[in-house]
Each structure stands twice: as structure tokens, then as C-alpha cells.
Amino acid sequence: MVKIMTDYYDFETTQELHKNISYYTQRFILYPEKIMGLTLPVDLRWQSIQFISDNKSAVSEQQGVYAFVIRHEDSNLPVHGYIAYFGITTRTLRDRYGEYLQDQKRPKRPPIHELLNKWKNCIYFCFAEVMDINIDLHTIEKQLNGSMLPPYSTQDFDADIRQAKGIWEKT
Image (cartoon, rainbow, N blue to C red):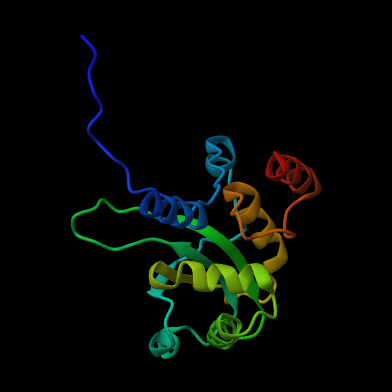
């Protein structure tokens, strides 16, 4: 018996859906050995706020480390998120937050502009103060990036990780 196909696809709608899914496709590396091997010279106490201009005053006026995390808060979903970028600032975290609000408006750094706009409704700014000025923030940044390998962080890795990440991104 031959079954006659009666389902028809709206090619235009399917093509638009494919275009949207392709736009939001993001490659992440989840490497448990690197994550579990993270050791830092300081304990970080992370705070998290949705990345919108109204939240700027909630950001610390101390130096520290920060991350952009893509997540969607919905009580119907379990806790989830992806770290997309790590950074540091020796100025205040609040000042750096304000600079990113400007980066969202103008493409000074195209990958960061993309990050802040592509994920606009589900991006969170996570930050941790590092009060001790003797702690090398660049070392912390490299260690965080090396453990999580966030897709929008491109330069602040140890040489071996940068090389391996570059090879992986070309495949």
C-alpha cells in the first residue's frame, strides 16, 4: 500500500524560520576538565542584573571582573545560561557597564555590538568586585576565559587555549 502525502509545507515560512534559527545559532564549548580545573587567587562573589540602562546604578563602583551571560528567566524553565564573555576593569564596574550601554548603540567593536544586540532581551551582566589592588585582574580574566572558553572572548586566553580555540572555530 502506498501512502499519499497530504502534508504541505509553506516554503516561505519554513525559509524564514530557518533564517531565524541560523541567526541565533551559537557555538559554545563545554569542557568539564577546564571548568573543574579553575583556580583563582581570590574568591569571587558574583552579582547578576539584566543588562538594561535602568540597572546601571545597581552596579558596583569598585574594580573587578564581569561576564555577559545569555539566559532567559522563566519559571517554566530550569535555571540555565551561557557565559558569552568575560572582562575586567580597573576603573569602576559601573563605568564599564555604561561603556557597554554605548557599545550596544554603536558598533565600535563589532563582535561586542553583536552580542549586546543579538541577545538583547536575555543578556545579563554579572560582576564581582576585586578589592585587593595587588591581585592581577588580567590573570583572573585569562583563567576565567581558559576555563569557560566563552564565544565572544577572543584574546584573553593563554597561548595554547587561544591556538586550540582558533582551530576549533575554523571547523
